[in-house]
Image (cartoon, rainbow, N blue to C red):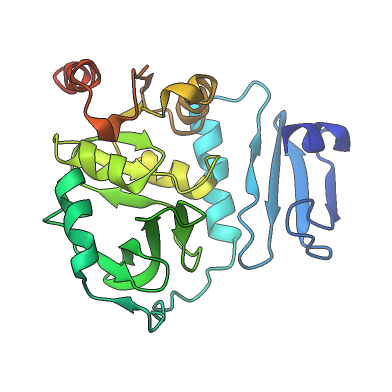
Length: 255
């Protein structure tokens, strides 16, 4: 997206409107350059493309522009997820899965068709999405049922740990943090708005995503102004490798 914005070659005060490069919406994408930064957004419901391409802006400037985006974008009505008939409240197929990941306190559901453990995602008491984890080799390994949720949160700690999957988010929540599973490959305005509510952010992605971990840290600090730390892991945090847990807890003790 950064290259697309740069290729627009907007001058100060210029505005362009056209088709969205992501969702293909007709004449729904706008970009405006002001104060050395390009504010861009797609107004089509369901499209998540929006942000600020920055040049010489402070964190406060970026936060103000993010708020403008959220205020201007139409808010879709939050509707409860309609559960497929094959997703049931529980099932014996979950027993070994619960034992393996210490999930006995989680309100898991069970997908009978694909044999998945299903993690419900709620918004103000309304179940709007769910994430399913395959138990017996089904593809994809992780499945979004509606795609309406921007992230999965677990825990109530003042420090939030950004992770890639739901089990990892629950793992760090049990250690006194808030865990945020991003449910995707990139950060959006919705992620940034939520992350700005915490005193500290730790990015703890899988070891094979080291470059993305550093990029996320930079983006979070630039967008929110909140101190962000890139935590280098020896393994996925949900595996609870002792060195990773110790390093994570050291950051928690500095709050």
